[in-house]
Each structure stands twice: as C-alpha cells, then as structure tokens.
Image (tube, rainbow, N blue to C red; front, side, top):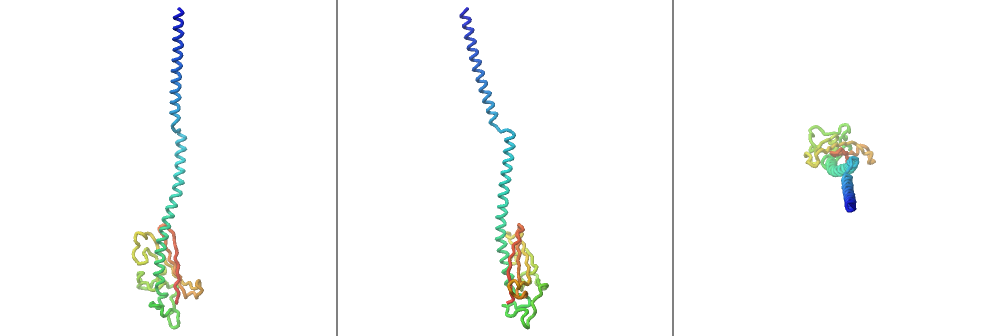
Length: 206
C-alpha cells in the first residue's frame, strides 16, 4: 500500500515537472513570436518614413534644379557675349553716317560744304538695303532685329532661340561732345532663358 502511494506521489511530481517544462517552452515560444512580430514596421512608422522621404526629395530638387538652370544660363551668357560683341564690332566698322565719306572718313557730314548728318527720326536702312551685308553706315542698323549671327548666316544649333535687337541714337553729350557728333549703338542679346544682355558702343563723327 505504501509502495503504491509513493509511486503515485512520484508520478505526480514527474507530471508537474513535465507540465512546468511544457509551460516554460510554450511561454518562450510565445515570447519569441511576439518579438518577431515587433521586429517589423508599424503603419505609423511607414507613413512617417514616406513623409520624411518626400521632404528630402523636395529639398534635393529645390537645390539641384536652380543650380542646373544657373549653369545653363552662364553658358548662354558666354554665347550671348560672343554674339553681341561680334554684332557690335560689325556695326562700329561701318561709316558714321549715310552722308559721310564711306572710304576712310576723308570728309564728314555737317562739315562746311558737306551734307547735313541724317536726322535721328530717319535712322534705319535706306531704300534697297534689304539685308545686313548691304548696310553701309551705323544708323542703318536702327531697329534691326533678327536670329542671325554676325556673319549674316542663320544661327547654328548653338545659338538657337537667341534674339538680336539693335538701337542707334545720337548721344554725343554722354561723351562731352555736341549731341550729333556721336551715335550710341546698343545691341541687346536675349538668351533662350529670357535673360537680356546689352552691349553698348559709340561711333563718333571724326
């Protein structure tokens, strides 16, 4: 009888021990499962990440795009300088006035016994001067606008969309002379980005 009681007691102890071990294993598995679930991203974390990424991209775009535009505009300004200076040199190489000597300015308009200089209101190409290669004096270029370069050819691919505009007027007073003794030539080059750059020179009646 005592033997049976001891056996039952042992069985109970073993059963409790095994049950406790099983419970511990189950708890460990449950704990590991919870940890695995917690290792992922929550919906809030995903949303915050998307918002942060959007802000970062916005900042990068804000910094990069203006820098690219500025770089392109600098290249356009260099080309505009080449085009504007070439055009200005071409104009200043012409005679001062239609009524002045076109072969070295041996005589000039407004001199004694010579014709008067052209009135500013009459500036512009004379009859028959239908292209730039026929312009023979500075004020023929008044009001000239075009998309052609200084060699009177269509602009090459590097000058596409560049605009040229020329204004000629008497302005001797700026140089301390009688107003009709000098003409101011202003060449405006507008780049494809809309930047207008002016180049100014003077042609005097000497």
